[in-house]
Structure formats: C-alpha cells, structure tokens
Image 1 (cartoon, rainbow, N blue to C red):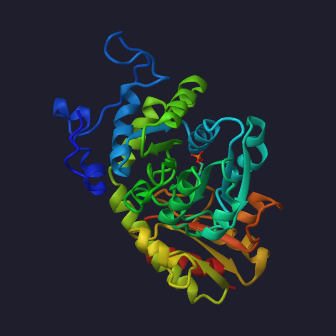
Image 2: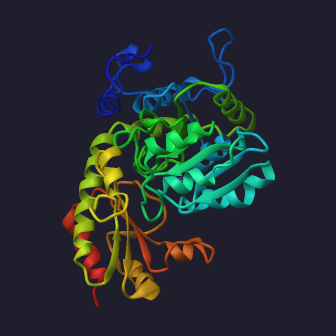
Image 3: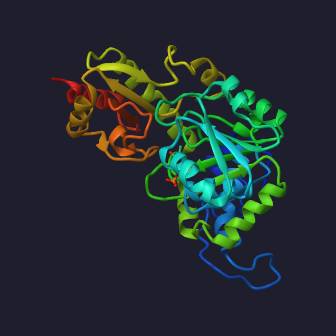
Length: 374
Ligand SMILES: *Cc1c(COP(=O)(O)O)cnc(C)c1O
C-alpha cells in the first residue's frame, strides 16, 4: 500500500502520502475502531495487531527510516516491553541522568524480572565502554537530550561501543523526534518515544512507540510481549497521534526557535545561575548536538541563584508557563523537578524544567522575567 518514494520526514508527516486510506480519495486518515476481523484478511484480533494502529505505525516507521514500528499504550509500556524482552539474566547499562520514572523502574523493578542495570555518567563514551560487562551486557540505553540537564549522547559513538560488545543500542528519542534526529541512521538498533510528548504534540494522548532497524528475534519477542500482556495503543488514541504527527516538522521548528530565544534571554537574567540548553555554545553537548540534531528542540532547564526557595516561588508566579509535569505540547510548562523526583534524585534542587511551547517568544520571556523578578 505504502508509497515510499518520498523520504523526507516533513513531507511524510504533513501529507501522510501513501497510507492506505488515500485509496478512497480521503485526504485525512480514518479512525478504525474494529477490535476483531473476518478471518482470511490478515488480521485476527486488535490486541495483536489491526488496521486501527497500522497507519500510525507505518508513518512512524517511515519517519524514523526503520524496518518496523509498534505503538503502545504509553512510553513506559514501550520501554518496559522492550527491556523485559531481553529476558532474565540480561545486563543493561543506562545513564545516571534520565527520565526519572524509567530510571526508577530500571533500578527497583527490573531486577524482579531478572534484569540487572548499572549506570554510567551521561555523554561519557569512555565510561559507557567501561560499564559494559563483556558477554553479559545485552543493551546500552541512552536518552538524548536527557532529562533534565539535556546532556547529549553521541549516538554513532555509542553504537560502535554497544556493537563491539555484542549489545544493542536503544535510544529514548522522546525529546528529539525524527525531524530533529534519526537515531537508526546513526547506528541505533531501536528508537523509543514517549509519543505523549512531541510526536502527538497536543497533550491529549498517552502513547508510546518503538521503531526497529531490523525485524530480528528481539523484535518478535517485543511483539509477543505486546500481544500477550496487552499494552496495545487503542485505535482512537492511535488516530489522535496520527493527527498530531501531521504538523510535527513545523511544530519542532517553532519549539527550537522559541527555546533558543528563551535560553538567550535567561543567560542575561541575574536570578539565573545556569542555563542548560544544548543549543547554547557552552553546553557540554553542544558540538555533538549540532552534528546529530536539526534544531535543538524545546526543552531546557534553568538553575536559580536564589536556590530551592526561589525555584518554588517562581513556579507559583508564572502566568503563561503552567506549573505542570510533562512536555512537548503546544503550551509552555514549568516544573520544579527536585521535589517531584525526591531526595534520591541527582537533580539539583534549584532547577526548573521548561517545556517551551509555541506561544509568542516575547510573551514567554516577559512571563519568566516577571516570575523571576523581585
Ligand atoms: C514522558 C517520558 C517517558 C515516559 O512516557 P509516558 O508516555 O509518560 O509513559 C519516557 N521518556 C521520556 C524522555 C519522557 O519524557
């Protein structure tokens, strides 16, 4: 069905060219809510697979340049299904700083399923290499840019290290969707997204996705895990995700432009001690980010010279930036991460995480300036 002569992610997302609905002349995809299918048509039951999810998977697969895609009920469902499919006895290495909820799952819950996880310092390829246990390490996990310091991992370098050790490279690319970074092209084996964030882009669907470079044994196990445990993405959510994807390229351009302007304004603000944004030349990951990203996305953090109290006060004072968790929607969000992550977290207590939305950049800067002012 698919017309794959168009390769550019912006074109694929905006026009949905080639997906099966276009056969009827419709220019927009359909919601396909059926949960069961007449035998003999290639489908049996929706929990396993069905047309309601396959258009979305086809588009995601083409956006990432993969060999197959699967959608899940959440980003956590996608990540845990992938990791559990490595099987008991597998050792996984993951970054010290990463999406907090998944880090906790890896350290506290994964051992119950026979996985052991050890951490390496973000972005440090030598330390990554040293953390690998030859013969035992089955996967290297990396998140780039990583929550909430937006540290950058060199995907091509990490792929070399993982593959030399016979391990797979899994990239959580939630903050860098395919119009920004294409990890499979850089050597990653599986890309994971919380599609709740930029892929959907409108804060109205919870979803996850995996895209693979190769449909190998591991991929078959992940499909089996989804079909048997059932964290399948519903047909209506799948359609909402597809709906959001159409504007992916133009949204990401505006997120990146706005975030750069906010970052530059924050650099000059006396209340701010650090601005963590990979688009800034003094960010430790800037050179690698400039190489593997198109634009630097919309996520940044600021640290305040006034400490944790100043951070707690600022989130109460913003009017446009809503004090809420999550990221990647059209609306700007601010969050004081330290208290959310708790005392075990490496996140500095004076840090505010900003998801820079699509509003007018001047309005966003004015809002932060008044919130950070005396
Ligand atoms: C939100 C998020 C997740 C988890 O995804 P859910 O859709 O909330 O389950 C994983 N990784 C990153 C980087 C995230 O931001």
